[in-house]
Amino acid sequence: MTADTRPHPVADVAAMTARTTTRILRSPETVIMGVALPVLLLLLFVYVFGGAMDTGTGYLNYVVPGIILLCAGFGSSQTAVGVASDMVHGIVDRFRSMPITRSAFLFGHVLSSVARNLVTSWVVIAVALVMGFRPSAGPLEWLAAFGIIALFILAISWLAAALGLLAGSEEAAGGFTFFLLFLPYVSSAFVPTDTMPAWLHSFAENQPVTPVIETVRGLLTGGPVADTAWLAVLWCAGITLGGYLLAITAFARRTAH
Image (cartoon, rainbow, N blue to C red):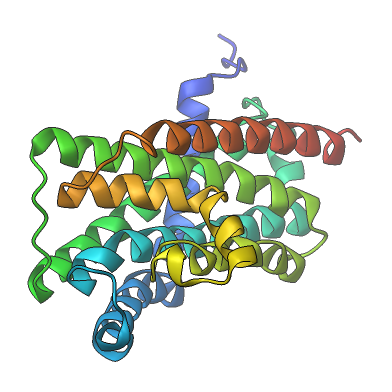
């Protein structure tokens, strides 16, 4: 009787996802930051800056979607660093010597990132509810909002995986993802874009984060979403496809020899 050496894509992806998630859970610093950072940012923006912000509505209701996307960007930077670390320290060469699906390595990192950031999103919402966040969304609006958030997390996770492969070190991977953390600040996440200078307002209105935030905010608080939902889906689909193709191509090149 011979051992089965055929790749099993679903089982391989599940094993790689479990491996990445287990590594994160064994890092107390990463777990603490993953939980503490969203809470601290929410408290900071609401209780320190919120009194000075004029958004035309309660600032807590306004800022929650922005905090969720900001923390998703932080989580994706951890994905980039994790991919770069695996490439630098040689574990990928070990995987290549085993009968597993080659792309399972990337899918494992991306799916672990999606799961981790969805949990963080729930933490933000749970704390916001305790602070007084009172969304008017029904079950379908909640489902649609989390669908948009999940699409955004999937998109930036693939992009982060690609950046981790393009980086030559863990430090460079962390630097490459800086713009993912920066984008929510230049959007409607924390203040209305109408308050920005004309040149910055134009950028803020036409970058990918703003329609995602406006759609999630509208779904949760009863605002209009018809003009932003399709833009949010298109941005997320485009970034997912671009990040996936870039990651697959970069992974193939780095493991060609």
